[in-house]
Structure formats: C-alpha cells, structure tokens
Length: 419
Image 1: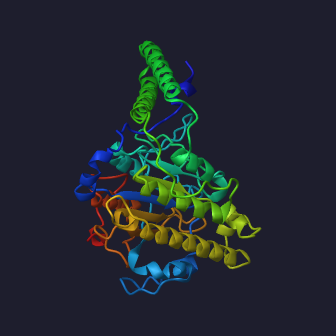
Image 2: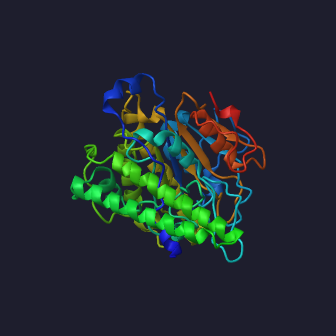
C-alpha cells in the first residue's frame, strides 16, 4: 500500500453553495464576519518597530517602523509581549504561528502540528462559500524565514494545507474560466470517489494486521481520506454554478516582491468582496521583497542586523511591509461587503510573526485591526511576560462567535481588547 497515496489531496470541510435567494436575510440577520491572518518570517527591527514600552494605551507615539500606518492608527492595536512556549526553532517564523503546537516529532517520525485557528473558523463558516478557506503562500518559504508547512494553515489532523504562491494562480482559482464541461467534471469527481472507496476497502483489510502504533498511523490516513471525500462532495455541490465576475483584471505573470504582495492583497479583497470565502491566510515573502527593493543582502543575513550595514535594510523591510499593510487597510475600507458595510468593518485582520527578530522567540510583533464591533482598537498594549500568543487567537475566535474553551496552549482570554 502506497503511504503517499493516502496523504494525497488533503482538503477542507464540506460546504453548501451560497444561496442568492437568501441574500436579503444574509444582509439583515446573519453574522457575516471574516478573518484574515497575515504572517512573515524573520520578525522586525526591535529598535525601531516597537513603540516605547513605557508609552502604552491609546495615546502612544507611533514608532518609525509603523509610521506608514499613521492614518489608520485609530483602527489597529498592537498586542505585544506574547509568545509560543513550544516554539524552539528560531527560523520557523510561521510554522507554529496559528497553532501553538505542542506535539513534536519523535525519532523516525515526521513533524506533526495541530489545527490552526483559521481552520476552526473555516469549519464553522464555510458552508455558504465556494472555498471554506483560502491559503496564499510564498514560492520559497525557507528563504523568507518560514519553516515546515505549505502555508500558515494546518488541518484538524495537524497536516499541512497547500497554499497558492502565485497571484496568477490565485486569480484563476477564483475567477478563471474553466475548460472542462459539466459532464467531464462530474465524471472526474465520480472517478475520484470510486478510487477512495477502493482505498478504504484495502486499508480496512490491512488494519487487522497492524500493531497499535501503526493503527494510529492508519487512522490518520482515514482522516485524510475522509477529508478528500468531504472536498469532493463540496466540489459536486458547486458543479454548474458559475464563478463570480472578477472585480479586477487578470494579473501579469512573474511579479515578485513588493508588487506581488500588493497584488495578493488585491486578490484577497476580491475574494472577500465576491463572497468566495470568509477565511484567508497569507504566508508572505521576505526574500523576494528585498530583491524587488534592489537590496543585495539576503533576508537571513538582514535578520541578524546588529547595527552595521544590515540595520538600514531591516528598517527598510519594516517600512515597506507597513506601507503594504496600509494599502490593504485602505482597500478593505473602500470595498463594500455583502451586507453594505465596508469589508474592514466585518473583517478581523491580524498581521505578525512568531519571531521578534533574529532568533528571539518572545514578544511576537502583532497587529490586530478591523471589526470595531468586537475589538477595542487604537491602543498599544503589552501583555504580562509569558502570555501565550494562543490567548489572542482564543480571544479572536470567541469574539467572532466561534466558541472555544481553549486553543493550543492558551491560558485564558484577553478580555481587555474586546468591546
């Protein structure tokens, strides 16, 4: 039995299509909240990104690295001082970011993560969207300070979920014309379903011969197969339903760095605007960002900046990332959601990194913005030493109606940031 065959095609939860006939009800009564998670490797420049630690509250002075966000100052908060206690890899800038994983590899076994918080939202909200969630990624994750994984997202079994690393690919997934006929799609789905039936039959026969440890492995495969089944069912539910009209032009191929991130932000807004999904993650490039700024220093060397020639490069990185984040916030504010509000008003937006800078793994740089109905924004807040980053994820999940008793290594809610 081919082990890889069982892991092939990990999917998302089943969902029904959005019902246009119920649009009026959606506008008036249904919680239409969204969540967007952005993360980058290598952290930030400690000396110029973090505001003065003695200057907390709503009247804090914006730092140099965050100055491009000045016009949005009242619409985002800095939640600083958190950490992942299980994170022990200084260059895994996103692997544990949305999970706070407490399960690690043992000799002879591959790395194992836990479910990411975006997938809790996707499971709860994905029923009426073509995509329960969307994962955007970067082509060369390692060079941008990201560790194991294919995106920021991990499924309920702690397995990596694939991400799209190219704006052109994202555009065509969302809005591209599909060449296959309805009959061809139905035949393909039917064939995949038959193959899964055969796999399950063979697996059940093998299960009788396995020891306890191997049975646990096989149960993981069963979960993977079930995940594929649910995804096929969702694809079948959407057969014959046309994709929405694209609110932007087809992107040019080959964009890198600054323009690539900017276009990914455009596509992110378009996906939310057309109700293709309500949950998006983006594991962002850093290496290609520097190259697009005509910087010859690698992103890894930049992260070990000290106070030499690498220091201004690190500061430039912060400036451009903040500039791009400001651009995204502008777009979200200017774009209407299905209920008539701006997307910014219905979206909980988070931006940050597992890493403060270099190999320093405490005091994660985190920006929270968006939905003022649930979030108290405009402040600089430093959490007590040792506060899990998962406390923030737990708080945001619950604030969005996704009731969770705990998440990852959370120890409680951060009630102070809620309205």
